[in-house]
Image 1 (cartoon, helix red, strand yellow):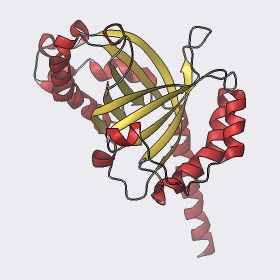
Image 2 (image 1 turned 90 degrees about the vertical axis):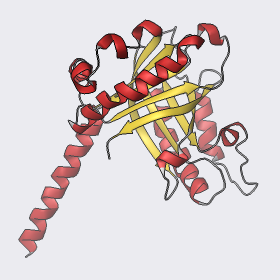
Image 3 (image 1 turned 30 degrees about the horizontal axis):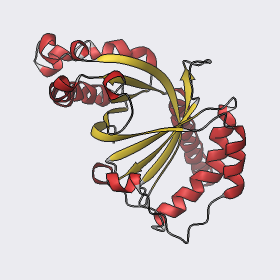
Image 4 (image 1 turned 180 degrees about the vertical axis):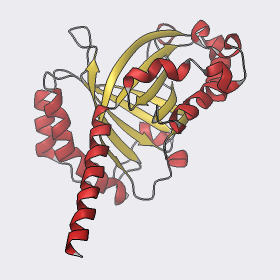
Length: 257
């Protein structure tokens, strides 16, 4: 019996190790798009009606684990900057081409009727590695995750910043959400893999998720909240400049169960 228990434990360890390695190799792509105001309705229709089906097919085949379309709800110089953000997570980044090439057969539509490149402009694209995640107990993503505040951090020590957030901010925000000290519903962070350089003003990203826009704009933290001051000081010490942030509305998500 002891030998059987050891064998089962060994199999479980292998499975957990395999899952960890798979997650370690996954890559998320952030693609920022600018869509002219008179094309927004058609763009959203095509993406949510047709390309979400292509994403679902890829998820069913385990070529993709997450697809999301976000619409910016604030910003500056709006006519000349991105107003939509795609987020796609690939277990194998080398399979990207094969995922989108079968759109016609999956949707039953001609490419000219569903493509969105002609009505939008890709302004930038980043390769990201998702790192840490926390969400409120009993969260219902399709009801609770309606708005995302993307926070852009710039540092010469991105691994250290991610580690500090994991050590100090993750347990703090998890407890604050569970104890209803904040209306925030989830939090995560990610490391920017590429591109990098002097022209790129952020090297890590964190994101706060909320149910309502008012909760993002006025988080209304409880006066009983005790912040991890030591950790926040350490994080601030390695940041190069003021953080940037943008609020997005979640238009549609397709994700693996």
